[in-house]
Length: 81
Image (cartoon, rainbow, N blue to C red; front, side, top):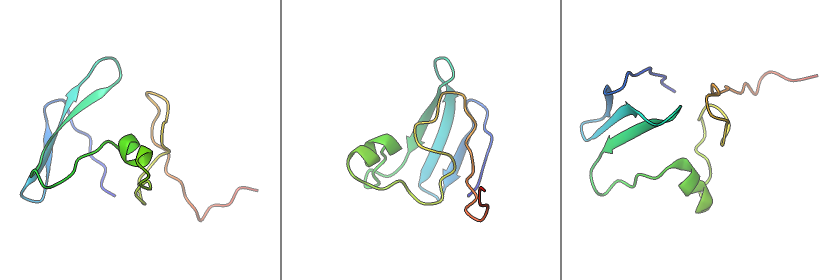
């Protein structure tokens, strides 16, 4: 997984047809603008999961973390106990 730090207004591209731009939002939130072909579905994760889709493998952090929390990367090779 690729981790990037972007400043408000900066963007990244995915292939030739997709651009994602970030902006400051209210409070601790951010706003994300996505430019993609109309045939590519763009859904927030919580909407996908509410509609029965599984959380994609390989994502960092846990769903529904508190605001401002840093994502936690789980390491399945480390046992507790």
